[in-house]
Amino acid sequence: MAKNRKVMFIFGTRPEAIKFAPLILKMQKTDGLDVIVCVTGQHREMLYQVLELFNIEPDFDLSVMKTSQTLAEITIAIIKKIEPVLLNVKPDLILVHGDTTTSFTASLSAFYNQIQVGHVEAGLRTGSKFSPFPEEMNRKLTAHLADIHFAPTETSKQNLLDEGINKGKIFVTGNTVIDSLLTVLDLINDNEQLKAKIIETLREVPLSKQILLVTGHRRENFGEGLQQICNALKNLAQKFDKLHIVYPVHLNPKVKGPVTKLLAETPNIYLINPLDYLSFVYLMSKSKIILTDSGGIQEEAPTLGKPILLTRETTERPEAVITGTAKIVGTDAKTIFDEVSKLMLDKKYYDQMSLKINPYGDGHSSELIIKIIKEKMV
Image (cartoon, rainbow, N blue to C red; front, side, top):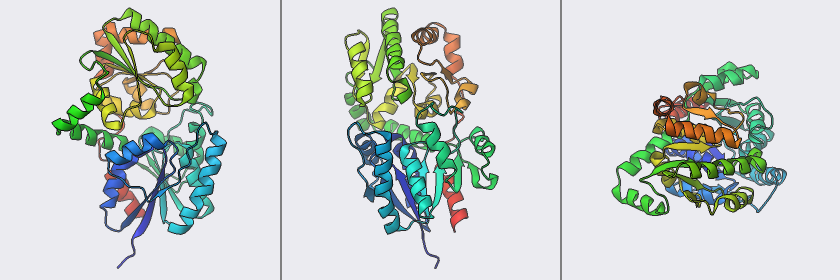
Protein backbone atom coordinates (compact mmCIF):
# COMPACT_ATOMS: atom_id res chain seq x y z
CA MET A 1 0.00 0.00 0.00
CA ALA A 2 1.33 3.42 -0.95
CA LYS A 3 2.28 5.71 1.91
CA ASN A 4 0.08 8.76 2.46
CA ARG A 5 1.74 12.03 1.54
CA LYS A 6 1.84 14.83 4.12
CA VAL A 7 0.48 18.24 3.12
CA MET A 8 0.95 21.06 5.63
CA PHE A 9 -1.11 24.26 5.40
CA ILE A 10 0.69 27.28 6.88
CA PHE A 11 -1.20 30.54 7.33
CA GLY A 12 -1.71 33.31 9.85
CA THR A 13 -4.42 35.83 8.90
CA ARG A 14 -8.20 35.80 8.57
CA PRO A 15 -8.23 36.19 4.76
CA GLU A 16 -5.88 33.23 4.40
CA ALA A 17 -8.08 31.14 6.69
CA ILE A 18 -11.22 32.03 4.71
CA LYS A 19 -9.59 31.04 1.43
CA PHE A 20 -7.89 27.91 2.78
CA ALA A 21 -10.89 26.57 4.74
CA PRO A 22 -12.74 24.84 1.87
CA LEU A 23 -9.48 23.38 0.59
CA ILE A 24 -8.54 22.02 4.04
CA LEU A 25 -11.98 20.50 4.60
CA LYS A 26 -12.07 18.79 1.20
CA MET A 27 -8.47 17.59 1.47
CA GLN A 28 -9.14 16.06 4.91
CA LYS A 29 -11.62 13.76 3.15
CA THR A 30 -9.20 12.87 0.34
CA ASP A 31 -7.58 9.43 0.30
CA GLY A 32 -3.80 9.35 0.11
CA LEU A 33 -3.19 12.73 1.71
CA ASP A 34 -2.57 13.53 5.37
CA VAL A 35 -3.44 17.12 6.29
CA ILE A 36 -1.54 19.11 8.92
CA VAL A 37 -2.61 22.65 9.83
CA CYS A 38 -0.07 25.12 11.20
CA VAL A 39 -1.12 28.69 12.02
CA THR A 40 1.33 31.44 12.83
CA GLY A 41 -1.24 33.62 14.59
CA GLN A 42 -0.16 36.70 12.62
CA HIS A 43 -3.72 38.07 13.17
CA ARG A 44 -4.82 35.89 16.04
CA GLU A 45 -8.31 36.99 17.11
CA MET A 46 -9.82 37.35 13.63
CA LEU A 47 -8.04 34.18 12.48
CA TYR A 48 -9.67 32.02 15.13
CA GLN A 49 -13.15 33.34 14.31
CA VAL A 50 -12.81 31.70 10.89
CA LEU A 51 -11.26 28.48 12.20
CA GLU A 52 -14.17 28.05 14.62
CA LEU A 53 -16.73 28.77 11.88
CA PHE A 54 -15.35 26.00 9.67
CA ASN A 55 -14.53 23.72 12.62
CA ILE A 56 -10.81 23.56 11.80
CA GLU A 57 -8.49 22.69 14.67
CA PRO A 58 -4.82 23.65 14.10
CA ASP A 59 -2.18 21.05 14.82
CA PHE A 60 0.36 23.80 15.55
CA ASP A 61 -0.05 27.42 16.65
CA LEU A 62 3.14 29.50 16.59
CA SER A 63 1.51 32.47 18.39
CA VAL A 64 3.76 35.12 16.87
CA MET A 65 1.36 38.03 17.37
CA LYS A 66 2.58 40.84 19.62
CA THR A 67 1.44 44.42 20.00
CA SER A 68 2.89 46.92 17.53
CA GLN A 69 5.61 44.61 16.21
CA THR A 70 7.45 45.55 13.03
CA LEU A 71 7.50 43.54 9.81
CA ALA A 72 11.08 42.54 10.58
CA GLU A 73 10.06 41.25 14.01
CA ILE A 74 7.17 39.24 12.52
CA THR A 75 9.50 37.78 9.88
CA ILE A 76 12.13 36.76 12.43
CA ALA A 77 9.54 35.25 14.78
CA ILE A 78 7.93 33.09 12.08
CA ILE A 79 11.24 31.81 10.68
CA LYS A 80 12.48 30.98 14.17
CA LYS A 81 9.29 29.14 15.18
CA ILE A 82 8.41 27.37 11.94
CA GLU A 83 11.64 25.41 11.42
CA PRO A 84 11.23 23.05 14.42
CA VAL A 85 7.72 22.24 13.20
CA LEU A 86 8.96 21.44 9.69
CA LEU A 87 11.75 19.26 11.07
CA ASN A 88 9.29 17.44 13.32
CA VAL A 89 6.52 16.82 10.76
CA LYS A 90 8.67 16.46 7.62
CA PRO A 91 5.84 17.34 5.21
CA ASP A 92 6.10 16.37 1.56
CA LEU A 93 4.50 19.68 0.57
CA ILE A 94 3.57 22.89 2.32
CA LEU A 95 0.77 25.09 1.03
CA VAL A 96 0.88 28.85 1.52
CA HIS A 97 -1.57 31.47 0.37
CA GLY A 98 -1.33 34.79 -1.38
CA ASP A 99 0.86 37.59 -0.16
CA THR A 100 1.25 37.66 3.61
CA THR A 101 4.47 37.77 5.61
CA THR A 102 3.52 34.28 6.79
CA SER A 103 3.42 33.01 3.20
CA PHE A 104 6.85 34.38 2.30
CA THR A 105 8.62 33.33 5.50
CA ALA A 106 7.07 29.85 5.52
CA SER A 107 8.16 29.37 1.90
CA LEU A 108 11.68 30.50 2.73
CA SER A 109 11.84 28.12 5.68
CA ALA A 110 10.59 25.25 3.53
CA PHE A 111 13.25 26.05 0.93
CA TYR A 112 15.96 25.97 3.60
CA ASN A 113 14.74 22.48 4.53
CA GLN A 114 14.27 21.30 0.92
CA ILE A 115 10.51 20.89 1.25
CA GLN A 116 8.26 21.53 -1.74
CA VAL A 117 6.04 24.62 -1.70
CA GLY A 118 2.61 25.03 -3.29
CA HIS A 119 1.43 28.63 -3.69
CA VAL A 120 -2.35 29.14 -3.76
CA GLU A 121 -3.55 32.42 -5.29
CA ALA A 122 -0.27 32.78 -7.14
CA GLY A 123 0.62 35.38 -9.75
CA LEU A 124 -1.23 38.47 -8.57
CA ARG A 125 0.76 41.62 -9.40
CA THR A 126 0.40 45.40 -9.41
CA GLY A 127 3.90 46.00 -10.80
CA SER A 128 4.59 48.49 -7.99
CA LYS A 129 7.08 47.39 -5.34
CA PHE A 130 5.46 49.38 -2.53
CA SER A 131 1.80 49.09 -3.51
CA PRO A 132 0.44 47.19 -1.76
CA PHE A 133 3.17 47.14 0.88
CA PRO A 134 4.56 44.64 1.81
CA GLU A 135 2.24 42.31 -0.09
CA GLU A 136 3.60 42.88 -3.60
CA MET A 137 7.11 41.73 -2.68
CA ASN A 138 5.81 38.95 -0.42
CA ARG A 139 4.01 37.31 -3.34
CA LYS A 140 6.85 37.86 -5.82
CA LEU A 141 9.41 36.33 -3.48
CA THR A 142 7.07 33.45 -2.67
CA ALA A 143 6.66 32.75 -6.39
CA HIS A 144 10.37 32.17 -6.84
CA LEU A 145 10.47 29.80 -3.88
CA ALA A 146 7.39 27.80 -4.90
CA ASP A 147 7.34 24.53 -6.83
CA ILE A 148 3.63 24.48 -7.79
CA HIS A 149 1.65 27.62 -8.61
CA PHE A 150 -2.16 27.71 -8.39
CA ALA A 151 -3.09 30.86 -10.30
CA PRO A 152 -6.69 32.09 -9.99
CA THR A 153 -6.90 33.56 -13.52
CA GLU A 154 -5.19 33.53 -16.90
CA THR A 155 -3.87 37.04 -16.13
CA SER A 156 -2.17 35.71 -12.99
CA LYS A 157 -0.69 32.85 -15.00
CA GLN A 158 0.72 35.29 -17.55
CA ASN A 159 2.31 37.36 -14.77
CA LEU A 160 4.18 34.27 -13.60
CA LEU A 161 5.26 33.38 -17.13
CA ASP A 162 6.56 36.92 -17.59
CA GLU A 163 8.75 36.40 -14.52
CA GLY A 164 10.27 33.22 -15.90
CA ILE A 165 8.23 30.65 -13.97
CA ASN A 166 8.10 27.25 -15.70
CA LYS A 167 4.81 26.90 -17.61
CA GLY A 168 4.48 23.26 -16.53
CA LYS A 169 4.32 24.30 -12.88
CA ILE A 170 1.46 26.80 -13.26
CA PHE A 171 -2.21 25.76 -13.05
CA VAL A 172 -5.23 28.06 -13.44
CA THR A 173 -7.75 27.02 -10.79
CA GLY A 174 -9.99 29.97 -9.97
CA ASN A 175 -10.01 31.37 -6.45
CA THR A 176 -11.02 29.32 -3.40
CA VAL A 177 -12.62 32.41 -1.83
CA ILE A 178 -15.64 31.81 -4.08
CA ASP A 179 -15.86 28.26 -2.67
CA SER A 180 -16.00 29.75 0.84
CA LEU A 181 -18.47 32.47 -0.09
CA LEU A 182 -20.95 30.08 -1.70
CA THR A 183 -20.66 27.67 1.24
CA VAL A 184 -21.39 30.45 3.73
CA LEU A 185 -24.30 31.85 1.69
CA ASP A 186 -25.91 28.39 1.60
CA LEU A 187 -25.34 28.03 5.34
CA ILE A 188 -27.07 31.35 6.06
CA ASN A 189 -29.97 30.80 3.66
CA ASP A 190 -30.69 27.28 4.93
CA ASN A 191 -30.67 28.11 8.64
CA GLU A 192 -33.18 30.66 9.93
CA GLN A 193 -31.87 30.37 13.47
CA LEU A 194 -28.36 31.22 12.29
CA LYS A 195 -29.67 34.13 10.22
CA ALA A 196 -31.48 35.47 13.29
CA LYS A 197 -28.24 35.26 15.27
CA ILE A 198 -26.40 37.21 12.56
CA ILE A 199 -29.09 39.87 12.50
CA GLU A 200 -28.75 40.21 16.27
CA THR A 201 -24.98 40.63 15.85
CA LEU A 202 -25.72 43.42 13.36
CA ARG A 203 -28.39 45.09 15.51
CA GLU A 204 -26.51 48.43 15.37
CA VAL A 205 -26.72 48.40 11.56
CA PRO A 206 -29.79 49.67 9.62
CA LEU A 207 -30.06 46.57 7.40
CA SER A 208 -33.28 47.76 5.77
CA LYS A 209 -31.67 51.01 4.55
CA GLN A 210 -29.30 51.82 1.68
CA ILE A 211 -25.83 50.90 2.96
CA LEU A 212 -22.38 52.01 1.86
CA LEU A 213 -20.08 49.38 3.36
CA VAL A 214 -16.54 50.57 4.06
CA THR A 215 -13.43 48.59 4.96
CA GLY A 216 -9.77 49.60 5.09
CA HIS A 217 -6.51 48.25 6.44
CA ARG A 218 -3.70 48.83 3.91
CA ARG A 219 -0.49 50.32 5.28
CA GLU A 220 -0.04 52.56 2.25
CA ASN A 221 -3.29 54.36 3.17
CA PHE A 222 -2.28 55.16 6.75
CA GLY A 223 -2.09 58.87 7.53
CA GLU A 224 -3.17 61.30 4.81
CA GLY A 225 -4.90 58.67 2.68
CA LEU A 226 -7.10 57.51 5.55
CA GLN A 227 -7.93 61.10 6.46
CA GLN A 228 -9.02 61.79 2.87
CA ILE A 229 -11.28 58.72 2.91
CA CYS A 230 -12.86 59.87 6.16
CA ASN A 231 -13.43 63.36 4.73
CA ALA A 232 -15.22 61.82 1.74
CA LEU A 233 -17.45 59.75 4.04
CA LYS A 234 -18.39 62.82 6.09
CA ASN A 235 -19.34 64.70 2.92
CA LEU A 236 -21.37 61.76 1.60
CA ALA A 237 -23.23 61.45 4.91
CA GLN A 238 -24.17 65.12 4.64
CA LYS A 239 -25.31 64.91 1.01
CA PHE A 240 -27.30 61.67 1.18
CA ASP A 241 -29.43 61.51 4.29
CA LYS A 242 -30.88 58.16 3.15
CA LEU A 243 -27.41 56.59 2.76
CA HIS A 244 -26.15 54.81 5.86
CA ILE A 245 -22.38 54.32 5.99
CA VAL A 246 -21.30 51.21 7.88
CA TYR A 247 -17.60 50.89 8.72
CA PRO A 248 -16.32 47.80 10.59
CA VAL A 249 -13.12 49.41 11.86
CA HIS A 250 -9.89 47.41 11.75
CA LEU A 251 -8.27 46.83 15.14
CA ASN A 252 -4.92 48.33 14.11
CA PRO A 253 -4.48 51.54 16.18
CA LYS A 254 -3.27 53.37 13.05
CA VAL A 255 -6.72 52.77 11.57
CA LYS A 256 -9.00 52.75 14.60
CA GLY A 257 -7.58 55.92 16.16
CA PRO A 258 -7.96 58.31 13.21
CA VAL A 259 -11.28 56.85 12.03
CA THR A 260 -12.85 57.15 15.47
CA LYS A 261 -11.56 60.70 15.90
CA LEU A 262 -12.80 61.88 12.51
CA LEU A 263 -16.10 60.02 12.12
CA ALA A 264 -17.48 58.99 15.51
CA GLU A 265 -19.84 61.97 15.80
CA THR A 266 -21.04 62.02 12.18
CA PRO A 267 -24.74 61.23 11.63
CA ASN A 268 -25.51 58.24 9.38
CA ILE A 269 -22.04 56.75 9.95
CA TYR A 270 -21.90 53.57 12.00
CA LEU A 271 -18.47 52.61 13.32
CA ILE A 272 -18.69 49.01 14.46
CA ASN A 273 -16.23 46.37 15.62
CA PRO A 274 -14.75 43.90 13.12
CA LEU A 275 -17.23 41.18 12.22
CA ASP A 276 -17.01 37.42 12.03
CA TYR A 277 -17.03 36.11 8.47
CA LEU A 278 -20.66 34.96 8.49
CA SER A 279 -21.91 38.35 9.64
CA PHE A 280 -19.69 40.18 7.19
CA VAL A 281 -20.91 38.14 4.23
CA TYR A 282 -24.50 38.85 5.26
CA LEU A 283 -23.72 42.56 5.59
CA MET A 284 -22.13 42.57 2.12
CA SER A 285 -25.26 40.95 0.72
CA LYS A 286 -27.39 43.72 2.25
CA SER A 287 -25.18 46.60 1.08
CA LYS A 288 -25.74 48.81 -1.95
CA ILE A 289 -22.11 49.87 -2.59
CA ILE A 290 -18.78 48.69 -1.18
CA LEU A 291 -15.80 51.05 -0.68
CA THR A 292 -12.73 49.01 0.19
CA ASP A 293 -9.00 48.38 -0.14
CA SER A 294 -9.48 44.63 0.42
CA GLY A 295 -8.35 42.04 -2.09
CA GLY A 296 -10.80 39.35 -0.99
CA ILE A 297 -13.81 41.64 -1.22
CA GLN A 298 -12.87 42.48 -4.83
CA GLU A 299 -13.28 38.76 -5.53
CA GLU A 300 -16.44 38.18 -3.48
CA ALA A 301 -18.56 41.24 -4.26
CA PRO A 302 -19.23 40.43 -7.97
CA THR A 303 -20.94 37.19 -6.94
CA LEU A 304 -23.23 39.29 -4.74
CA GLY A 305 -23.84 41.89 -7.48
CA LYS A 306 -22.26 44.76 -5.52
CA PRO A 307 -20.29 47.59 -7.17
CA ILE A 308 -16.80 47.97 -5.68
CA LEU A 309 -14.88 51.23 -5.36
CA LEU A 310 -11.21 50.61 -4.57
CA THR A 311 -9.39 53.02 -2.29
CA ARG A 312 -6.07 52.08 -3.87
CA GLU A 313 -3.86 53.42 -6.65
CA THR A 314 -3.29 50.00 -8.21
CA THR A 315 -4.82 46.54 -8.01
CA GLU A 316 -3.37 43.07 -8.46
CA ARG A 317 -6.86 41.94 -9.48
CA PRO A 318 -7.35 43.78 -12.80
CA GLU A 319 -10.04 41.34 -13.95
CA ALA A 320 -12.68 43.03 -11.78
CA VAL A 321 -11.75 46.45 -13.17
CA ILE A 322 -11.69 45.16 -16.76
CA THR A 323 -15.11 43.50 -16.47
CA GLY A 324 -16.51 46.63 -14.81
CA THR A 325 -17.42 45.26 -11.38
CA ALA A 326 -14.77 47.42 -9.68
CA LYS A 327 -13.33 50.88 -10.16
CA ILE A 328 -10.12 52.31 -8.72
CA VAL A 329 -10.81 55.60 -6.93
CA GLY A 330 -7.68 55.99 -4.79
CA THR A 331 -7.88 58.01 -1.59
CA ASP A 332 -8.71 61.44 -2.99
CA ALA A 333 -11.77 62.71 -1.11
CA LYS A 334 -13.38 64.38 -4.15
CA THR A 335 -12.96 61.32 -6.39
CA ILE A 336 -14.52 59.04 -3.77
CA PHE A 337 -17.36 61.49 -3.22
CA ASP A 338 -18.05 61.84 -6.94
CA GLU A 339 -18.01 58.08 -7.65
CA VAL A 340 -20.30 57.16 -4.76
CA SER A 341 -22.62 60.00 -5.75
CA LYS A 342 -22.76 58.74 -9.34
CA LEU A 343 -23.67 55.23 -8.17
CA MET A 344 -26.37 56.69 -5.94
CA LEU A 345 -27.90 58.93 -8.60
CA ASP A 346 -27.36 57.11 -11.91
CA LYS A 347 -29.27 53.82 -12.03
CA LYS A 348 -27.88 52.83 -15.41
CA TYR A 349 -24.31 53.29 -14.17
CA TYR A 350 -25.11 51.31 -11.02
CA ASP A 351 -26.63 48.45 -13.00
CA GLN A 352 -23.60 48.31 -15.30
CA MET A 353 -21.33 47.70 -12.31
CA SER A 354 -23.62 45.35 -10.40
CA LEU A 355 -24.87 43.01 -13.13
CA LYS A 356 -21.58 41.33 -14.03
CA ILE A 357 -20.22 37.78 -14.01
CA ASN A 358 -17.59 37.01 -11.38
CA PRO A 359 -14.23 36.52 -13.16
CA TYR A 360 -12.63 34.75 -10.17
CA GLY A 361 -14.23 31.34 -10.06
CA ASP A 362 -17.25 29.07 -9.93
CA GLY A 363 -16.92 27.53 -6.47
CA HIS A 364 -14.98 24.41 -7.49
CA SER A 365 -11.39 25.64 -7.14
CA SER A 366 -10.60 23.45 -4.11
CA GLU A 367 -11.50 20.26 -5.96
CA LEU A 368 -9.26 21.21 -8.88
CA ILE A 369 -6.30 22.07 -6.63
CA ILE A 370 -6.58 18.72 -4.82
CA LYS A 371 -6.72 16.86 -8.15
CA ILE A 372 -3.54 18.60 -9.31
CA ILE A 373 -1.72 17.93 -6.03
CA LYS A 374 -2.58 14.23 -6.16
CA GLU A 375 -1.37 13.97 -9.75
CA LYS A 376 1.90 15.75 -8.96
CA MET A 377 2.66 14.05 -5.66
CA VAL A 378 1.45 10.46 -5.99
